[in-house]
Structure formats: structure tokens, C-alpha cells
Image 1 (cartoon, one colour):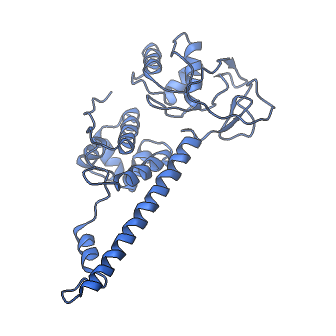
Image 2 (spheres, helix red, strand yellow; image 1 turned 45 degrees about the vertical axis):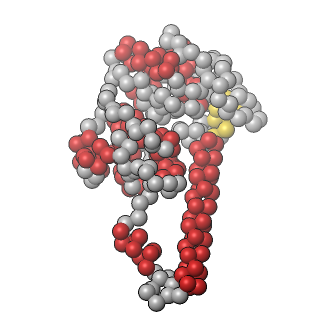
Image 3 (cartoon, helix red, strand yellow; image 1 turned 90 degrees about the vertical axis):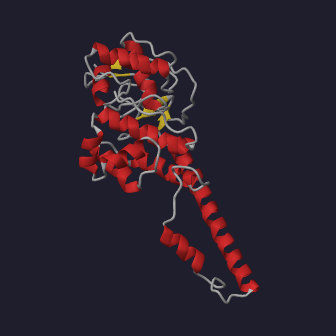
Length: 284
């Protein structure tokens, strides 16, 4: 498991979240920085900066990382949008969207009243115009951040929809998870972090174990994740005799330790992250 440098304390929390998720995905893939550079077309030095919070990666680099690690880039790109918008909030932030010298000069020298013969009235008018443009950019950024955060809260990591009768509906189905007690019933159900969800593990027709909260077998979750797949993993860990604490959907230190014990017992790579291999053991 990689020993990462501590991220800068001054880093905006939204930029930090993007860096943490990219680190987890990179670690889970088993790729080194050199291999990652070869697969993405971005240099090893660039990835060192991106993953250690010294600069914000471009959108294309984030998408390339997802492709190189064989995961759906949608969640990472959403986090990137939030990080970029957060970075525009002020100077001194590695996530700040910096202008090039050419853009800065063009903005400074263009428009009415910017020439050497401009009068005070023209300069004042130009100043007001720049202030209005800045206000419009800040307002648009705030709206974007609000919309993306709302999307991240509403949509779990593995793309699952709202549940029926307290049970999840899989991402590719219109009915509850196979064999779940809520199967065949209808009704609204909203995810509530902190609730201790009941664990009723059963073996479905496909021969695999399910607790009824998620049918994923490849979703990537780790410390800091909070979603339905975490509840599923916590219930399955209990079934295998490894207590993760409360089955609340929040992937904390106790859940991470339980996953590491399961991985050690199954002779998997011990990283505390639930991916395809670890799901395979949990479902058996």
C-alpha cells in the first residue's frame, strides 16, 4: 500500500477530497506512477503533483486516470468540477484556476477606457464592467458547486437508485435486490447516514450472498465512503465473523480494519479498500 505524503493543511476540503479519491483509485489499481504516466500520457512528475495536492489536474487527466484504472469516470469528474469551482474562490489554493499571462494581459488591456488616452469616465465605466463580469463568474461558480454537491448527495457512488420498503434497487433493475424482503413492494425510502441498518444475509439463486442493500460486485469503496454499498459490505463482513461495528453506511476505521482482516485471511492485497476481488470473497 502506498505511503502518501500528508496533503497540505491549507488545501480546500473539496480539492482534498478529489486528491484522496484519486489516491485510492491509483492504489487499488496497483499501478505505480511510472505505469500510470505510460497509460495516461501525463508525466510521472505531473501525477506526483496532482496526487500530493500541489496542483489541480485538468479534466482530461482525471478521465485518463479513471480509464487507466478501469473505473467509471463519472464520480471523479463530478468531484473535479467541485474542486475547480472551489479553487476559484481565492488565491493561494493549489486548486485555483490560474489565468495565463496572455489571458491576464488581454483582460487588463482590452475594452473601452484601457488605452493611454482614456478619460476618467471611460476608465470608471470599464472598471464597472469588469466588476460585473467578475460577479457573474462568482455567481455561476456558486450555482455549479451547489448543483454538483446536490447530485453527489442524491446519487450513491455505484449509481444505485432510491430503495423500496427499506431495501435497495440495483442500478440495472426496477425491482429490489434479489431475494430481499422488500422484493415486489413499492414505497419511497431515503438513505439516512448514522442509522444502524438490519443485516439479513441470504444466498440468492446465483449462489452468492446478499444482504439486500446493493448487488454490486465491482464497486470501489474505502474509508470516507458513505453509501448503500457500504451497508452491504458491513453486513457481509458481519456474516463472515468480522465485525465492522454499526452497519450505518459510513466506511470508518472499524470497517477498514474488518476489511483488512478479511483480505489477510483470503490472501488478498491488504489495503482496506473493497474492490472486485474483495467483493468476490464477501459474496461467497
